Amino acid sequence: MLIQDLRVLDLTDHRGELGPWLLARLGAEVIKVEPPGGSSARQEPPLATGVPDGLRSLQFAAYNDNKKSVELDLNSDAGREALLRLAAGSEIIFDSGPPGYLASAGISEADLTSANPELVYVLVTAFGADGPRSNDPASELSIAALGGPMSLQGVRERSPLKVSVPQAWRHAGAEAALASLVGYTRMQTTGEPQWIDVSAQAAMTWTLLNSMEAYEVQGYDFERAGSKVSLAVTIDLRRSTRDGYVINAPIGATYGPLIPWLIAEGIVDESWGDEDWSTYDHRALSGERTAMSYDDMLVALDELCSRYTRQELLMRGIEIGATFAPVNSIQDLLNVNHLEIRDFWRPFEFPAANEPVRRAGGPLTVDGERCDQPSKVPASDSSGTELRSEPPRVRRTRNIAQQDSDLPFSGLKIADFSWIGVGPITAKCFADHGATVVRVETEKRLDTLRAQQPFKDAE
Image (cartoon, rainbow, N blue to C red; front, side):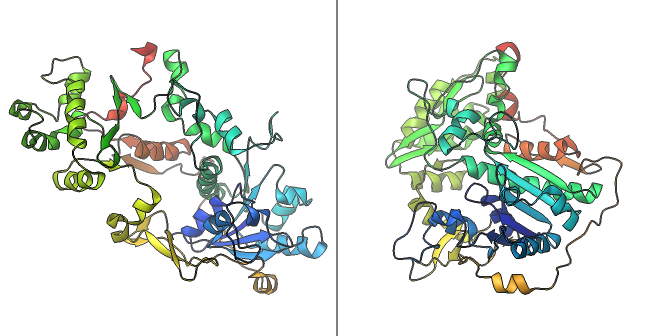
């Protein structure tokens, strides 16, 4: 496991629990510190029936199944002493606020740094720990709206939409997990404690990606476009099939492998095979004349997809090197053999089930092994006796020579061969925190990211 020598204290409620859950998936020992009677997160819906109180919440089960639990009364001297003793032996603390569980109990920054001068403390908030809205009430809907992404969700002919499953606190939790590890690396670089404020509103704003700077660059915001994406032309990515939908981008780089299939089906004539599809996008976006237009490609592709099911398109696409992404339900995902082969699903013991059920395993694999831990929902205070009586833990102390820069990745050099979005965003994160990132591109294929709006003065 990647971070099995880290101990993390989780004082969050439902708003911050995903961050420490992710660290536990990577190997950290995570201890959920709960008030007497258990965390309020244990009552978050949806709730199962026929299950002991405190274990009914399916949401709690999903994001706390790899944690230990201890109840501490922070209003008592004994509870406060036990908390500070745990903090002294931990590397990272997560909290939900403002003001935070610890601050509400009167435990200050000074108290924590006195116990642990190398502590990384992460506070997950709706709008930030300070500012005029910091104490405003917040819901999933209000954070999604105030963060910006609702303005781009749906189609412009109707009102904005919220994604149907929770997003705000999930994005904030993922950002908190990342921030905690960046902060821990910075602590090792500087030798100083780190105080990190993660705003769910800001996390949602970052999901806008290139939409964030659209107004500043081109003079107007992007608008809701449903499943369409704007390159030099606007393309709808959604294709209708015999039993639903698939996602496919009809661009030259991905269209070439489809040509023999389209010809065999009688959808296009053999002249389509004469086109140099590997350079089509570059030529089309540069204004050069091409034998087929993007509209021609769309018509042919839609006809092909209408003849097959999602699964048939997926499997044939794998054979010929073409990408068809079925729009899957959860039931569909449970039957995807690709995930089964990759050991994605793991057994999960839930009190409402008579036998282990399947759930998503760890988020990544290292050397072919999926990062994961045994999955069982802890009863409140299930590890309390053990943790309250354990000897002081020797935490993993700073072991990196102090550098001139206070940026955690200063001196790190990264070659970035990625393209489109996720890879460049990841490399940018390292660069933002001090790494030297060299982007390596090929002359033979235009990175589609370079054709994405916004363009200066909309040109």
